[in-house]
Structures are given as C-alpha cells and as structure tokens.
Amino acid sequence: MDQTTTIRGKGTIVIPKAIRDRLGLEEGTLVILQETGGALLIRPAIAVPIEVYDMRRKAELLLNNAVDAEDYARIVQEVKRMGFDPATIPHDRPQREGDDGGSGASSVS
Image (cartoon, rainbow, N blue to C red; front, side, top):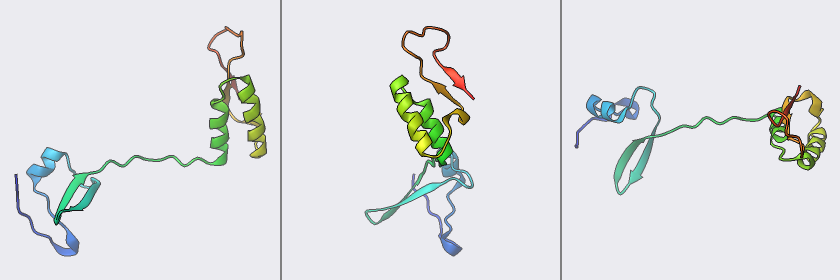
C-alpha cells in the first residue's frame, strides 16, 4: 500500500501511524536506509549489543573453556603470561579422567 508523506526540516520523514503500527516501529527504533534502483527502502534494523572483554575477562574465558587437563595446563601458562594468577580468577576446571564424582567440575575461587 503506497502512501505519500513530506520531507520536513533536517530530512525528517513522518511514517504514517498505520504503517508504524503494522511494522512495530516506535520512536527510537533503529532503521536501515537503502538506496535501491532510484528508490529509498526503509526497513527495521536489529542492533546486537557486543561485549568488550578486558584482559581479565579473556583469561576467565580461556580458563573456563579448557577441554581437558592438558589443555587446562597450557591455558594456565598462557594466563600467567597475560600477567594474572589463575588461582585468583573464578573458573571451573575440566573433569579429570576417571573422575565420575558429582558435576564434573570443581570451582576455583
């Protein structure tokens, strides 16, 4: 359904309420403007927040993702090279072979 609107000061375009409601557009909604074939396409955009990791958080992620004892030992050395004491970073150690007790991981504080 085509509708006409006017470009106002500073390039503001009013999208008719019926269209906003149908597309779920509210004040502050992020949209993408795409020039295509001499026309302007306006479509809703999705913004995904990103997490920026500091070095301590990277060390924690490394320690928590060790897959076995050998990998864990290698990562402990890497974390030390990063300037951290692995014992001060909360993480779960991988389960040792033959260890069938409990959850399979022990928490290090």
